[in-house]
Length: 272
Image 1 (tube, rainbow, N blue to C red):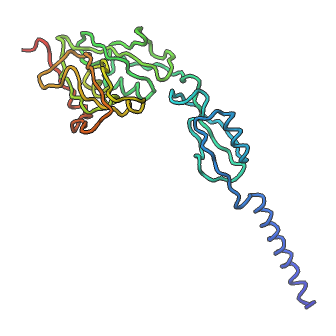
Image 2: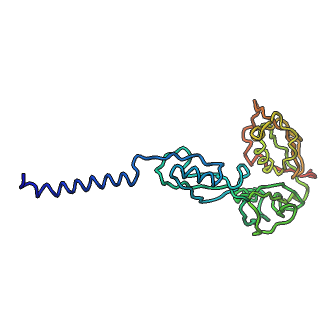
Image 3: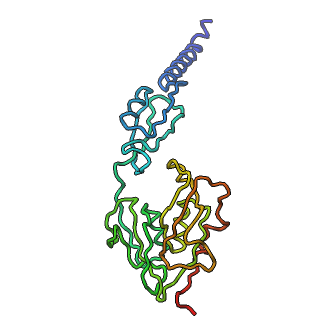
């Protein structure tokens, strides 16, 4: 046995070192220990820190956005999401709701087509308040951009989410457009269709059975004025009034309602 000791001793020491290292590593990495990430959305940063500290987790704010759906300063998004298990000591990355929208540069919309201008506004986070029309040879071309009734120059600073009025050309002879059928569309879809048709949303006369904000969001159009008709044409920029209902049974839009091509035809008031 003694003659094998010099050979076995190094192997035994190596095994003990490996076993000790493995035990230390398990303890250091807290193998098998998990912490449940809480759902922090809607909470303040102070509340989030308090909750996370109790679970040996840490909050790190990485960005901010602006939404009117949640209180200012509250948490909008988180990573990892609530309900996931992570190791203690893990950082939870948070996106908070800013106290006010971010400032952006107003784009140059003049000389763009209506479709291009609306697309640019949507991409950078601005809204279309209204389409106004004035006589101009270029039909549906932007001839002015207004903010709160006043011209706004390109590169002027403006808050994200604000609404811009587009002044567009109506042609030399008073082009008129057909009234689209918006029955069965949601309020948001109506705005999209009427913009494509060079018209504006008028008054929401009624929202039947709309008791909550959610009801209004899912409500659909049951009536419109003026009504849609193949021979019913109105001046570009006219307003269409709508009646909504939360009872959407049987209310569905016509197939192809979101095809821009069906709203591109115009007529002139004094055409032969």
